[in-house]
Image (tube, rainbow, N blue to C red):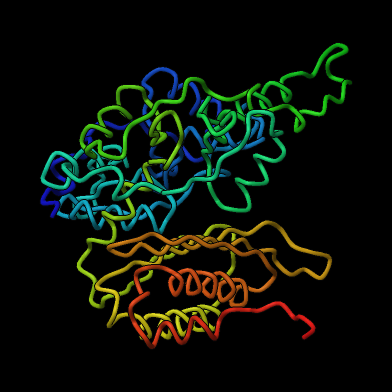
Amino acid sequence: MVSSKVKDVFSSKFESVNQKDTLSVCLSLFKEGVPPVLVVLNDKGKYVGVIARRWIIRSRYDPARTKVETLMRPAPKASPEDSLSEVARLMITSGISQLPVFSGEKLVGIITDEAVIHGAVVGKWGSTKVGEIMTKKPFLVEEDESVGAVLSLFREHGVSHVPVVRDGNLVGIVSIKDIITGIFQPRQRQTVGDIAGEKVPVLSISAKGIMTKPAITILPGTTLKDAEKKMHRFEISSLVVAEKGRPVGILTKKDFLEPLAAMEKPIRAITVQFSVKDVGINEIQRGFIMDDFESFARRYENTIRAGTLFVYMKGHGTNFKGDQLIHCRLKFRTQRNTFFSSSEGYGVEQTFRIALDRIEKQLLRSQELAHEPKYAKRYLKEIEFPETEL
């Protein structure tokens, strides 16, 4: 469906820094050439990873004192002959949207998520309507909702953009970047005078106080090609899908990449793709997770033509016992629907299982399995009726 390859869209121009350089060196290069990512080299000139501007922006490190190696990441390597679907898969599973391109042992360039999306929509796939891949029924916040509530929503559901509404009508959009650049970074710079001693309740600031307005919108019937052009023109990473002034969906770069990644020649009807950050998963835990997924896939692969389960796991520190708090977010894309769930807990297997159970319940309730008698029976067994006195 998408015939372009990495060699058709990657850039041979890139900037590099040494892993011992400070983050301020990176920020200078970002300002001068506005590259989306920098290649990180060691003292021998060998590739060791990449570093992106947004990672520095989202961190609380002092750029003048912190070394590049503190924030760099060892991104997976792409080849000029790789398909864009394969690169989209690498980006989804690694959580890194700018990858180095190697021809053999030689670093020849960089490929970004924007390049992948642009290369994919210039062909037949670009005629697909936005409504087919957008995230439907997005989370919304009222304009008077606090920044603290928005941050909680971001953390609980693993999203980074949320439309802002007034009485159901779209008035703006808030991103994690808006919060960091509009609130936290200015406060970090307030280190002198009376301001430094003030304890302003920044998390109580309303969403309308930091939102971007107006939000850039598109219609569900817009083609992916036109949507990508609009993203590029406004230099944004998300579009609100609206009808009659009300948000009905949201389209992010990840919404482009996920269906692309799912095109990568699956060997079975239902596949799984993992993206894990700050979570330690050993082989035994991974085995339990895959056993749960295999059981899920066997139950539905003969009924659902094709589907991909995207698993996003992130660690959030430990409790007093040393157990790691884990947030798990699932997105199950089928040919007809997209299902979402999330869970949070202190065990990898249990947290994943709870989120997967929630996906399964949504699937059973959906029209996708509504006319299948055996699934209808299972759904009835899943329903929890409240206890009442007769």
